[in-house]
Image (cartoon, rainbow, N blue to C red; front, side, top):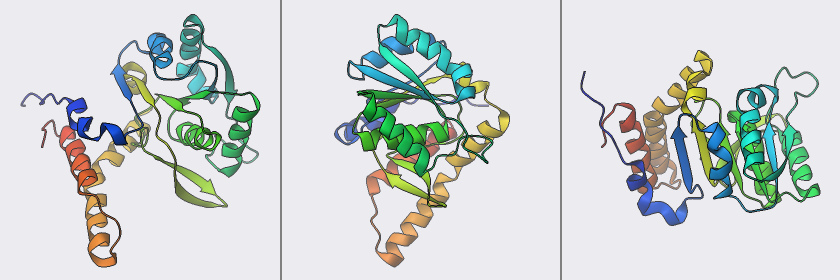
Amino acid sequence: MSEPVKVDVSAILAPYADRIDTRRIVLETDLLERSGPILTQELPKGHWVLVSDVNTHRVAGEAVAKSLTEAGVGFEIYTLEPAEGETVPVANDAKVDALRQHLVSVGAVAAVAVGAGTINDVAKMASFKADIPYAIVATSPSMNGYTSAIAAILSQGVKVTLPCRAPVACLADLEVMAQSPYRMIASGFGDLISKPVSNADWRLSHRLLGTMHSADTLHLVEQGFALLEGVAS
């Protein structure tokens, strides 16, 4: 088996630096205990809100909270709870609005989400509506939307993708990600390998319906897919 090709991702993204909200991505081991100092370099000083659910707080939130405290950050913990009839929290209008109202009412200057899809989407949209920056500490490689500028929200019973701002920073402790349930790891891998199909759909829509198409975006997605094969395009 050939050795994987090492790729400088920062070099791939450099030409688009003025158009990207996310200024820092850290993928390392033993990262949670260093998350506080890293996040203070990217988020404004003031009162922060740490958003998680019961599971993600146990897996990573406690360590992040400890690191924030040691870094001298003033913050509070906001726990996403399942609503009546839910077994786990769902990213919907109600949860987004509740978090937005909380961010505004406590005078938060930033939010830090600790979790995966649902928590990331709720914090992303709520902070966008509150007009404050946010960062994400990922807990599972279950999807590819951590740094996207959209959020998947159940709105009036229909799952929609809504435009918003991407996080200013994305931190992923590789040991935490690797310990994620296999079904979540497989789900994220499926998300990644589906991209060539979505590119084909996008190009077809552009040709037949005249929808917007970006050659730069297409190229970036294709480069990302090439990394999965260990080869830079």
